[in-house]
View 1 (spheres, rainbow, N blue to C red):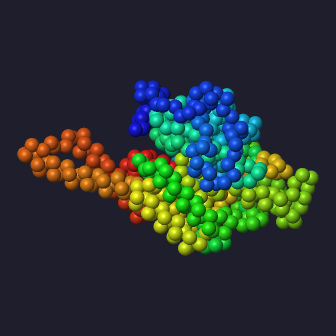
View 2: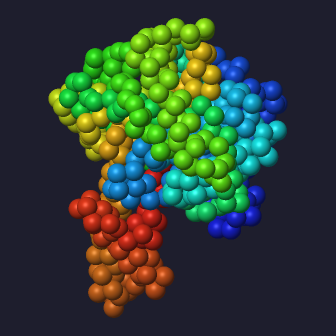
View 3: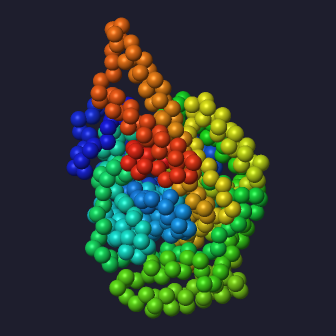
Length: 478
């Protein structure tokens, strides 16, 4: 049973009953170093508990997301949302001497593990990034630093593994429910990182958005989000998720959404405005920064267009590495994939997920679109450890999460309507000695039914009532 999330920013669930720590969380975890973890090279192995190590209590989970990313998508600003989500990772990497960090990109936000001695620098970088997103990008990026100790006391584990899609990069995979809990804490406004003063600029060196959307080559781009259902048999749920990974593997290149040789470059780049805002202090001349970025990107465009090799940099090699280093599959308390596949394969994936959902094993959301976006972090172009985040062009992971949460809310609505019927029967039967529901229970049922109505509106394309819809949607582990 999950301990309730505290209702004040300073509250911590110290009164929770002691929870048995997973093997290795005490003395064995004192020397924990993420970079020392043996990486998995087969993606299916990230579903294996043996790949994961518990994160010590003294660590923190930095978690961020863009408020109302759905509205930004509707306004055609999903590239900006992706850029802001990736900016968090770039800012933290640069603030922490570009050391290898355990992070996961979620489309409209990111989660990053922070070591005890990194907390102050990470907090400052997060505060600067929140302020920059507000001032430069006109996006409401919220951030929180949640203690792992508190997450564990609330009944959740934070366990991490390293997965290497190529010999040059590793991405963090997460298990145990701790990141999903941290996201719920964030959305309740707890452990919030306040924005830095207006005009504060984080160090976003290496963050770029220069590639055109990669059009689907095999039919469509499918955004996939799958989490285990509450109370599901762990082994059976993992088996269902593994089935989906195997199905995706039937697509050409295992569903990789980027073409061989990388996505096309265009000049001026489609993310020019975002890159301009990521460069230098906001009080500086926007026109001068724009000219600087235009010049730098023109030189880069010509180098790639001509396939040049300069010093230790090779344009063809970089593009091959870009494809190999992309995070199109990940696991962070659930499966996320951005796939280029045929409509038939997408239908088969959906059918398998529907069967698993009907069996009470998983909850899922999908979104189909025509292209994928790429956001890059390349601090030193000549090195091979550049990382690339991919998401669907038309909302991607955010749309898939919206679909999942809407289904959750509708299920809650149906359940509460059934309870309401039972409550009416209780009232009718009161004269026969049957207990009548108390006023508090009746009020809760009515509030929940309003939530269900909001979810119906969401599915029908009508904006939901913010407070009531959010109450149910915060419960989704995404």
